[in-house]
Structures are given as C-alpha cells and as structure tokens.
Length: 357
Image (tube, rainbow, N blue to C red; front, top):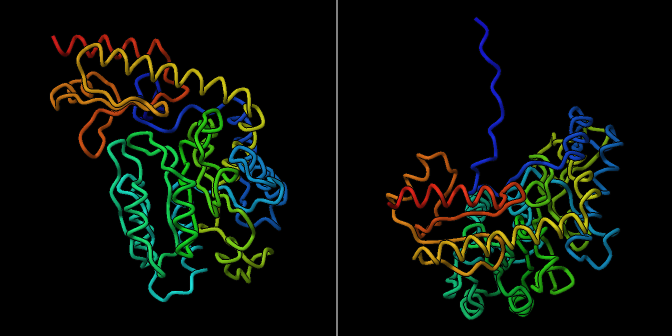
C-alpha cells in the first residue's frame, strides 16, 4: 500500500524557531542549483560565482569596510561558522594551549567547537540584562586567549553584547574578535546598536541568511575581515580541480548559496527594514500584552520576547499545538520572525487566556 506523501510542517504555530519561510525568489533559485556543489568551485563555476556574490552581500549587511574584498563562505549554519571562527583563531595564535572567552549566554555551538578543537572554553558571567560583563571578560583573558566572542542577538534573550568594548579588551590581550550575529545580523542594521565591522575591530562574524535573511535551509554565513582567516583554515585537496579548501564540510549546498543570494538581492535593504519594523512592533506589542496579564517580561531589545510562565501553562501551550521553547533559566521564549503575524500572536493569547482560566 502506498503511503501518503508527508507535507512540510506549517509555520502557523511556530513561535520558537529562528528559521522562517524562504522568500519566493529564494525558493526558486534554490531549486535551480540543487545539484551544484560549491565545495568544488573549479568544477561548479556558476555556483562559485554566486558564492562570491553571497559573501559580498553579507559583508554589505555587516558593514564591512570593503565588501568586495571580504572573505568568507556560505556555511551550513551558525554552528559551522562558529566552529570555523574558533579554528582559525586557534591556528593563528602562537600559544600552545589556547583558550576562548565567551559569555554564559553564548550559543551552545561554542561548547561543541571547544570540544572538537581541544580548546579551553572560558565562560564568563553576564549582567542583569543578560549581556557579557566586560570586567569579567577582562579578568578571563590572558596571553593564551586566541579569541574573544561577542554575541549580537543572543539565542535565548535577544541581547547584544557591548562589542566595541569587548573588541578593545581582546586587542589589549593580543586576541582576535568574533561576533556571533547568526540571528541578529539581518535585524541590527536597522537599529542603533554597535555590532558590525564598521563599529569595532571585528575579525570574523557569523551571520545566517537562513534565519531572518529568509533564505532556504541550509545557508549560514561566515565572514572574515581578510583572506588570512581562510588561509588559516585551508587544507590540500589533491584529487579535486580546486587544489585547496578552507571550508569545514566538503560537499556543500548549492541550493543554499543560490537561495541566499536571491533572498538578499530581493530584500536588501528595504524588504529587510520592513520585516524588521514589523517584527519589532509585534515583539513590543506581545511584551505589553503579557505584562498587562501579570507576567514578568524582559523588555525586548531585539524582536524576541521572554516571559516567566508556570510549567503547567507552558506544557498546556505545547499541547495546544504552539511551538514554544524555554530559556535555560526557564522563561517562555517567543521569537517574532517574519512568519509570525499579529494575527498569530492574537490567537496565541486567546489560547493563553483560556489555559489560565
């Protein structure tokens, strides 16, 4: 008996994901390049050219001083980009036993990276607003620190670390600077935050088109200020037409590259500005509504709402079909991505009110 073909999950009740529905142009472009492998650019020249364009566009979003000269590539996502940033910093540092400093609100991929690369991970406290505490970072760095990580749009609370301050601390210690803007990178250009290559001496950055950039999965991004970072990652590939490779994976998604370019060309900057404005408006509205119902709510910095609800209420929301998640300290977490409309949030509140009766 033939089984019914499964359908993709609807985004109608997805409130916890940092991925969203791709832009129509990105879907179409991704389908055209399904069989192309950017991992062998000398063979797949068309997608290699698109990847150069993707890096230039990402560098434009991140305010690189010379986008056409930026280095980087389209990764599988933020985890790969963070691993590669740590790997490059380790390979370029002189000390035998290197360490990396990141706040306790850093993404869990840094724990993976440290274990894979046999690097000491020094996790430092955050302040009352869940941002890296500069004094704690300064106390943690030493001559063996290869990298200081700043988060620009934390996964749990949507907070932005003081990137220029962290950059100065890193430079004084002889360390490099990485900014994890995997989610925040397509929102922050429309704010007053100091987070980009133009704001601080940033060496590498994670910035993912498949999050708020509305590109298909997988299409993350690693950016570097110059080619020296990728040179530190390169290995020989003698059986390929391309004789060296700086990426972590070999075969990669041509669909992700093409979709990322199509999304950015369709949406930068006005489309992203409009989506950002809607997301911020929705987050502020939801935070106000939850506060009016008596919940403790963190004031949103980026369009991510965190509120304290009981375990019983949280479980009931999940049973009602809402894809919500918790922070590490147990707060409800709602991410106002482009697919999250005001109508969706109203429906969410209707269920929340029903559950609390």
